[in-house]
Length: 204
Ligand SMILES: [Zn+2]
Image (cartoon, rainbow, N blue to C red; front, top):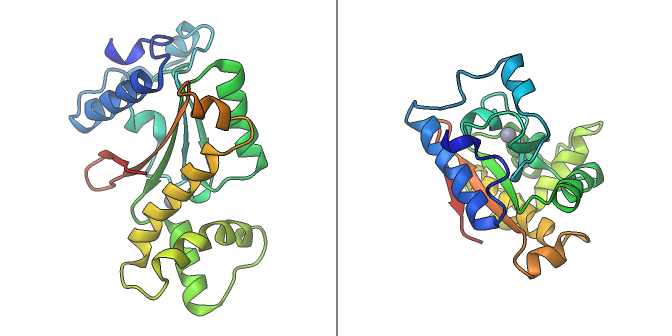
């Protein structure tokens, strides 16, 4: 099973290849793990040896293990609205990289992201949401401002920009900057296309 070489992908390049191969299996309708979501498969995973940590959105249409055809024990997944960072998220990623030796962090944005749409609306109308939703919007707003809130394509452009901003923030994270600088760890950004299921890497 090509997708179950848990523990094999110990370099950023190998980990990325493994992830993208899983997405190709998903897109082609030939997942090797799609049928294997059982308690028996969970038990068989034994100790975890994940090779990547994925930070994605809470959107119900973007289940990360499924779209990368991964099984138990292979990837760590963190999901927040529009993959917004906070200290808990950063601490979780630092744990996975520092304690579990994971060489790859992927930030995955997606089309038609509702959280990004809220940030675009806020910048266009000045009507800021209340509660903790304001925190999410505030974290996304700089990406919207950079692309221009009034631009008709503000939403799709802000989705990309927000991924790249999140990647940039993680690359200078207190505990990640060293491993990133010496090549032991990479942080990459990618986009998920709802219509096709394809994941595309973004250039930094
Ligand atoms: Zn979203």
